Length: 421
Ligand SMILES: Cc1cc2nc3c(=O)[nH]c(=O)nc-3n(C[C@H](O)[C@H](O)[C@H](O)COP(=O)(O)OP(=O)(O)OC[C@H]3O[C@@H](n4cnc5c(N)ncnc54)[C@H](O)[C@@H]3O)c2cc1C
Image (tube, rainbow, N blue to C red; front, side, top):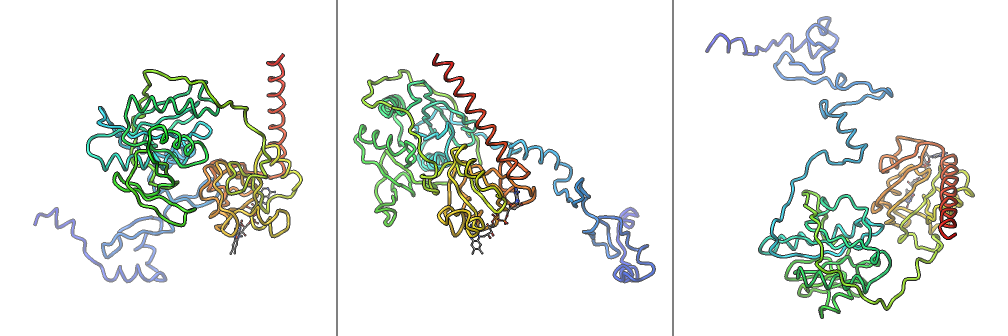
C-alpha cells in the first residue's frame, strides 16, 4: 500500500460520532459544521442537511434548485411555451414504399386532439407493415398549425386554395380521388367526427366502393374492432381500406419528430358544386350542450357581479359553465355545473373566472385544450393548470375584456361598411 492510499483511509472516531449524535454536547458545533449543506460525518458517510439546501427566493419562499444551475433556462423555456428543450429524434422516410393517408379535420386551422390520435394510429399501422411507409396528411383550408412535425406527419398535402375555404365536400372528394390516383394509399384514415371526418370518409368510401369501418377504436392491419349499437357492442371485422376512427383510438406521437415534407398534386380537379354554402348561421351559445361546447366561460365563487358575467359570455359568444359553489349558491342552474358531479367538458378554450381549481372541478376539464384562468390568487391550482392567466379582480378584468371585444367588433363593422361602399 502506498503512503498516498494510507492517507485516503477514513478512520472512524467513535467519540466524535457520539458527539455528532448528541446535539446538546458542548463540542457538537465543532464536530458538525451546521452551515454546510453536505458533509462527511465522523463515520465517513455523506450527510445532507435538508435545512441548508436551497435558497430563499425573491418572494420569500424557499426554493430548491434540482436542475443545478439550469433552472433559469428551464423556466424560460416553460414560459415561452417551448415545452421540450429536448430535441426529439427525427424520423425520416426517404423513399416511401407505401403511404397511409390521414385526412385531418383541422378545426380552426389546427390539428385537433382527435386528428393527432388518428396520426398515432397511422404510425401503428406503418410499424406493423413490411417496408418503409410514410404518413401522408391531407389538410383542407388555411392552416395555422405549427407542429405537424411532432404530431407525426411525414408528408403534408396542404390544399389551402380559396375553393376549399367553405363547406365544399364535393371539391374535397375530388381532391381525395386525385390523391388516390397519385399515391394509392394502403389505408385511408379519418377522424370519426362531426367536424367533417365522418362525412368525407363516407363519401370517399362510397366512391372507392369500400365498406368503411366506423367508430373504430382498436385497429391493426388485419382486424378492426368498432363500437356499434350506440357504444354498447363491439364489432370485430377485417380491417378495410377506409377507416373512421374513434377518439383515443391510439396514443399520439410524442417521442419523435417527422419531416412534414410538403407534397403537391400534379392536377387539382375542380367540380361544379351541387351544394351551395350559405355561410354560418348564428346560434345561441347557451343552446349548445355544455359537453359539446367549444368555448366555455365558467364562473366560480370569485364572481360577484353576475349581470356582468352573463354580458361577458354573450359578448364573447361563449357557453356558460359554473363551479359547484356557484351552483349551490343558486347563481347558476345545476345543468351548468362542470366537474366530477357535473358535466365533463371538452372545450377547445375553457375560461375559468374565480374558480380555485378543486380536484372535483379539474376532473371535468381534463379534456379541454386550452385553459385560461382569471383569479386573484396567483398560486391557486387553476392558475397552475392554465396556459394563460390573468391575475386580478374578476370584475375589473371582465369589464375590460367586454370593452375591448365590443371596440374590436365595432371596428370590424366599420371596416366592413367601408368595403361595401
Ligand atoms: C363529492 C364532491 C363532489 C364535487 N363535485 C364538484 C364538481 O363537479 N364541480 C365543482 O366545481 N366542484 C365540485 N365539488 C366542490 C369542490 O370541492 C370545490 O368546493 C368547488 O369546486 C370550489 O368552487 P370555486 O372554485 O368556485 O370556489 P372557491 O374554492 O371558493 O374558489 C374561489 C376562487 O375565486 C378566487 N377569487 C375570489 N375573489 C375573486 C375575485 N374578485 N376575482 C377573481 N378571483 C377571485 C379565489 O382566489 C379562489 O381561487 C365537489 C365536492 C365534493 C365533496
